[in-house]
Length: 485
Image (cartoon, rainbow, N blue to C red; front, side, top):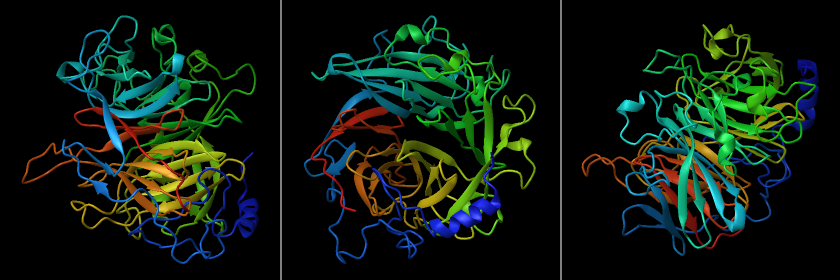
């Protein structure tokens, strides 16, 4: 049943300028250089006012790496787990390139299993380091993307193998409560485009524990065909939420609701669904005055709360018209560069990257929180425009995201210039965790690849992250500690 505007307007009197959440992250606010320095008055649970000079969050300044790869705070260290052109798969080929979304799972005998996307689009024949096509694991023989599974032993030994191949532009995705990885294709290529022999733009399930379960891969068409970015699963309702990174027009936030009867989540169950099973819907938001919100990117005040309705997608397989283009103006709420997501605190943290034309005040990224019980979206983080991206300091272009076992968020930067992994505390103060020092440009015009795939090991001791180009997976360890608010 939709949340009526009257219901939301009445509810907003109670929720006020923001929703104070209990849990790991609580109510995030903003960051240095952001558009607003604090939460609006009346927002609760932020820890302000008790100490006018709280201790600085984080682990101190980053120390330059003599190896020219990764700057970290003093006391921290890193280890290269996989590197394109250097490490090899158990089948003999080199590790594929373009590392992207990653999730970590507890494996047998104390191992950690990491499912790693490889964001490789276009014809496989033109790619120097595609995901190898192994018998039984290929969806489209013309495509070069896919996933590998990386097994890290307590001894330090590493093994890597193909989880799925023949997919395209595997960007982000999401882990499931039943221990699998949903890999998302960020493309709308159909058979015949860019050399493809099958339609793309789907979600596929990869099981890191059971290689046999990945045989004969099939897309989960019930989740729609569009430029997928990330997905999370609500473990209570079984609903899935999905982001779309697209423009012209901007992409949408989607929700998939399972069939009311005859379906239960579990390993391999999604691929057995009928193509039109359940309901695929897109957001329609409005403010506390009942006014329709056309684009989330326009919000410029921390604590902004929107009510959310859900509108059916007419043709989820986008046979003739892209899913996001099937709606008339005023029918759905769009967003500039919907990126990573993470499920925590009973809802979904959702990243939007920079906005320029969409916003009355330009910004370099947002993090929203969707509360499915209240059916509200609340703006938690708003990054101001980074005026000097070539200089170390400010952060911009948030992308992949994870909730830290030590409090707050850890965010992978995909902005201009210098690239970081950075943290945001419960009150929204930010701090650096790592800086990419691998210059893939020139001395005169340096260039640094984005960070991707940020995720903690199941025991919380190791932070894994990728440098997308050329394709490096890193394990970061050190004196992790609970972060001050």
